[in-house]
Length: 244
Ligand SMILES: Nc1ncnc2c1ncn2[C@@H]1O[C@H](COP(=O)(O)OP(=O)(O)O)[C@@H](O)[C@H]1O
Ligand SMILES: [Mg+2]
Image (tube, rainbow, N blue to C red; front, side, top):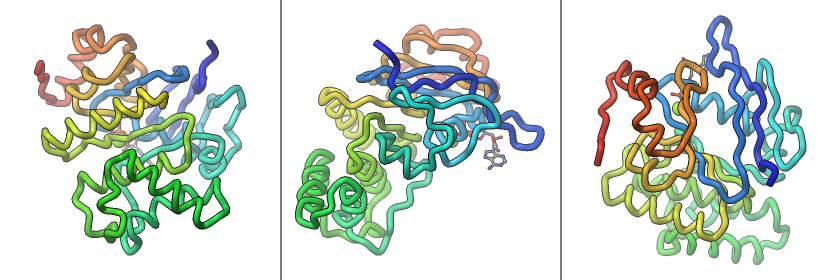
């Protein structure tokens, strides 16, 4: 099967810094691929190249067989790239439902239908009880879930999640894993940036490791979490290596 998303020799240089340095990878339909790596490794920059917030210095982004280098972020969203941002930015004065409707309106011109679809999305992410709540009043965990809902609202082919578990407590992380597993079972494809190795273990079929902009390892979660170069990249940054 051909890849849904295919990144070919992508680089992003900021003046002298190679934030992303010649990274090639691909994601097939239905896969869950995780990207891990120390802070500053280039993970978010890599996402920005994929979804179009940044133009690559070199390389190509091919999505559903089409080279999308010249498409703006909203055009890439329209053809099926959904994403969340590490710093979530819901429109805080609007309700949860309205935030999701901004997404459903993109594919649905009827107000009623857009509202119905938004309600379905909120049901999927177990947030229907919060539909009328002002987004600015949500907890961190609810805000992250709203980010996922907003990505889902666009009926994406692939979802790119940037550290959606960061700052959550254990039970919130478990709920979040449960949600992602449910979405995966429904056929959703994921590329996720994740710091929490428990999540990577529970959830990923394939793991890529970025370090100083370079792809240094790729394999199953078990292979990767035991690879010496990976441990070195993490320990060099003072990360804890949790085995649980
Ligand atoms: N817009 C930018 N201008 C200059 N440097 C940037 C910019 N965005 C990110 N960087 C730098 O690129 C490197 C990778 O950052 P980032 O992609 O955010 O890493 P990660 O998400 O893995 O923590 C860092 O050194 C960061 O300071
Ligand atoms: Mg980041």
